[in-house]
Length: 394
Ligand code: SF4
Image: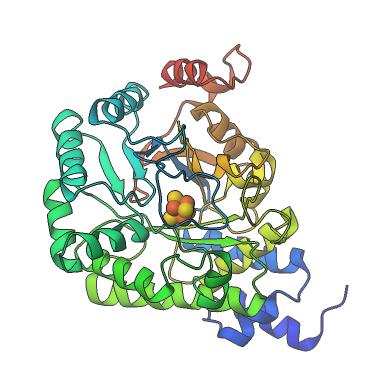
């Protein structure tokens, strides 16, 4: 397909690394994906270690599934009267972290529903308990939605609340709940959901206080490409500000596609195909010129599309996620946890060196690929077997 002079000029500008404006980012959605992907991969090779694909060994922990926000796209939350609702005690959470420690994990991503019955002391006590019993584990916890709830319920302003949580042991505030940071889209998908202003206000305060954060995006709500471009520009602007004023921006960018099974949006939101996902990933790499670390989403797209993502702008495979409950509750037909071996295989077979990183995308070690890929064992799907396999290769 022959490109118009305007399209060629836009791709050349993008490949040069020059910043694109909203109209230019929006125009990328109308160009052939292979051409856009080639530019994205070119920029990925320049902006992150060209021969390396990173990932983290971690565990998601959901301390409660009770939530009073009731997002239409969520299949994870329960009301407290439902028989399968839960709030974990500290010992249960500690046992999960011990399993993570046994496989060399370095962080937990701990989030829950917005459970109106939990007092501030539950959160601070939990952080203190984890730091006391698992001092080497980083705690990245509480989405902006949970922080907003705490702010309203516990009579503390945001700065004071974050100070209390940091003193208790909080290391980072994941940027979950970004979805599409355009309030028209958010109101339709989840009327009671945190608005974009509060999402940025809370992440900005976290960055100012030196906490780890990442930026996120979910596509498939029926948003327009203009709204997707706006989302990317808002994230980019915040990154500029955080790097300039706090020297502490988003450590990475994670994007995945909406899963709607068992949710009220099932059949109402279009979701996103693999093609659309790869297109969005490539455009994100081009637009986010101040973000070197862009993740592929294997839980949302499967291992094969995640491997292809490494040529569409992604430089990172996220994490092993020994436990994942939120995306998996809304269906999706892909695995929701991975072994070290599987992530190494994805990177190695695509022509990259796999590296285990920490939360800040600093490389901790390079797994022994020969030992790993010579293991005479079948890939496994049970968690116990995964733990054994992961132990064997470290
Ligand atoms: S997405 Fe989060 S805030 Fe929304 S209903 Fe689910 S648990 Fe609650």
